[in-house]
Every structure is written in structure tokens, then in C-alpha cells.
Amino acid sequence: MNDQTLVYYISQLQQQIQQLTQQVHSLTHRVQELEQQQPAKTSIEKLEYHFDQLKIERLDGTLHIGVTPEDLQSMDEFAVSPSITHPQASVQQLLESHIDHELPTYIQSLEKQYHYPLESNYRQALITDLKQQLPSRISHYQQANMPPQELPQHIVEQVKAEMQHGLNNWFIQQQKE
Image (cartoon, rainbow, N blue to C red; front, top):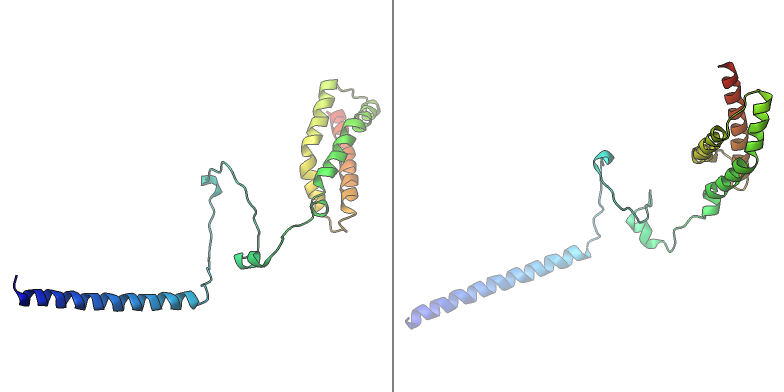
């Protein structure tokens, strides 16, 4: 290799290094500009869920409906008192106790009144059926528009009355058949 060729190669390499250096400076400047800009908002126009196609084995975490990620960052604590919003557990316990201790006597009085005696296993099936319906009936009466402190008592009274009315109607229907 002669000296001229070597000088030519070195000159070409030097030009290429200068171009790459300019390119690096340009890209560094562009990255700094982008970092300084406000983060872009994500906009989702339409979500389509096909739950029948999902297989969820485990689901945990917290779902905040109507809260954006920016709102979550500014919140210290996001909690709602369960005793006010979800009286369902204590109400269900009260109603189950009523079903276990007071309702059998009421059912026996209806048996005598309508002359329609029930076998013990059939009576137990009625009681079990009433217990299974409790969560849906409690949820139904939770929709009442009333002060939260009065809601549990309202739910208990309404569900008790509904059970008595339903059992009474059931005995009337059985008598007709």
C-alpha cells in the first residue's frame, strides 16, 4: 500500500467519524427535546370485550373506575368505608339467624293454618332455598334511596316481610293444587 492510498483511507474514515459525531449530537438534541415535552395523553376510542373468550385463572388488584393514572399519582389513599357502603355481610348474618331460629316456627304455624304438613327434609329444603336467595334480595334492597345508617335495618325488615309473604303465598298455592 502506498502513502497516497493510506492518506485517502484515513481521510475517508475521518469524514465518516465527523458525520457519525454530527448524527449523535443531532439525536441527543432530539431526545432532550422529546424529554422536555409534556407526556402525550393516551386516548382509547373504543374497547370491545369478549369475556366468553377469556380464561382467567387468577385476578387480583384494584380497579378504579373513572380514575386516570394521573389522578392515582396525586392520591395518598383511595378507600371507602366498607361498613357504610357494604352492610351486606352483617345484614346477611342477621337474616340467616332469623331463618335458622324464627322461620321454622313460622313455617310450622303456616302448616297448621293451611292444614298442609311438611316433612322435615322438605321444610329444610325451603329454608336452604331462602338462604340461597339472600344475597340477591339484599342487593335488591340496597338500591333504596335512604340514609346509609338506616339502610341495614330497612333491608332486614323488607327481606323478612318478603320471606313471610312468599311462604304464605307458597302455602296458598300448595293448598290449591
